[in-house]
Each structure stands twice: as structure tokens, then as C-alpha cells.
Image 1 (cartoon, rainbow, N blue to C red):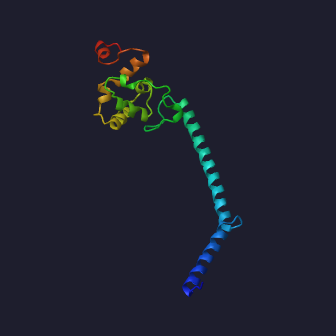
Image 2 (image 1 turned 120 degrees about the vertical axis):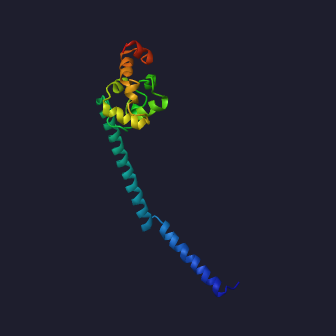
Image 3 (image 1 turned 45 degrees about the horizontal axis):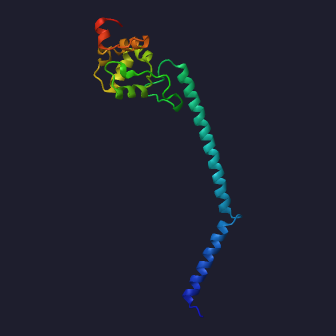
Length: 165
């Protein structure tokens, strides 16, 4: 069996490539050590990030516990606070399910928070919900929320007409 010059050259190239791959894959190879070092740095960075996120979630939960009003318009809820301490804001006449969801996203979860709105907060909410200016005052959300907070079962139009709020 005889080899021509091209076959010998091809065989040498394959041997050199195999030798280089073997060096890179060996446990003593510098590239393997660099890769392992980078993995260790990445794992520690992930642990640090998770610790910062956990500390942030604890701080947010603490602030939400101590705050009667929303922290800011657009404040989001944390996973720990979802579903706890919320009133059915859609019971207020003029508040749809979609608007209730938008109110919750804005940090308003209780009737007391709606009852305590000032004119500036009303204007901000009207813009956020796409309502006409003055719609919240016109539908008397604050009065209805106050009545619901006191335990009145139907705070809507009937209570406004009878003056029971």
C-alpha cells in the first residue's frame, strides 16, 4: 500500500488537529482550567444576584406592610403579597374588572385607599385608566369606597340617591 503526497499531507494535518484537540481536552490543559474558573465566577455571580434580589423582595414586602397608601403610581405587587388583603374594587359603581386590575397594578387594593384619594391622585388614575377628567368624582368612587369599607352592601347609585353614604 503506497501513499501519494496529498494523502500523506492530509494524514499529517489530521494528526496535528487530533494532537491539538487532545491537549485542549486534557485535565492539565490551560483552556480547561480557564473554562472551570469562568464557571466558578459565574456561579458566584448568580449567588450574589439571587441574594440581592431576595433582599430587595424582603425590603419591598416590609415597605408594603408599613405603607397605608401605594408606594408609587405604577408600583407592582410582589409574589408574597398577591391575593392577600385585597378588596373587590369592581363593586364600586363605574369600576370594571379591567379597571380593577389596573388599579391593583397601580398599588390600590383596598377600599380605604380609594376613599383616601386626593384630587391629584384622582387625575393620575383617570389618565391611567383612560377616563374623562372628573369621572372618578362624578361616579363618587371615594364615597362608594368609604361605604364599602364601612360594610354597606350596595354603595352604588341607590345609596347615593338615598344619601346613605
